[in-house]
Amino acid sequence: MTRTRYRGVGDIVRTIIHGVDAGTLLREARRRAGLGQRALARRAGIPQPTLSRIERGLTSPRFGTLDRLLRECGLALDLVRRPGAEVDRTLIRERLRLAPGERARLAVREWQRTRAFRRGATR
Image 1 (cartoon, rainbow, N blue to C red):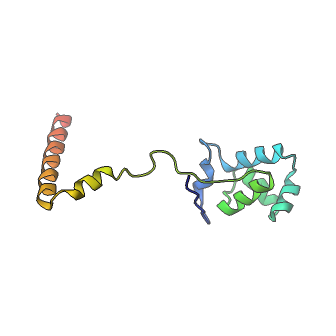
Image 2: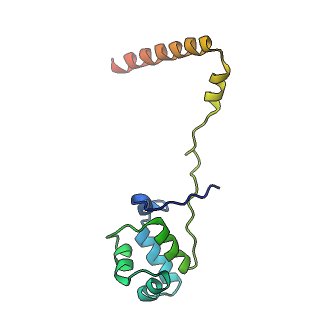
Image 3: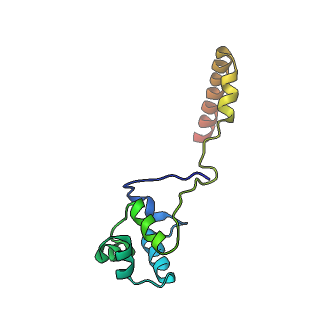
């Protein structure tokens, strides 16, 4: 699990958990914690109108602000890399083990295959 800290991220918090926006997530967390908007805003050190705008989706909070608000509700916000988000470097490593001439020949063959495929796809 990789933790990443972001600062000033605009839209990253709009789709945090499978399409749930930050406002919906925050409102649900606040209600489950039994807190009103004023109480949560006071605890987190932000104005209540700002919290209201976040919950209504009118503004997108910074990652640190959302993290602080959720922590006051008893939750933690962690960014975890999705499976498949990483680049598979296996093929790259295999190619780098080849001699330069062999890599060039392989690249030409792949280019020829791609060209043939594209020609077949456009017909």
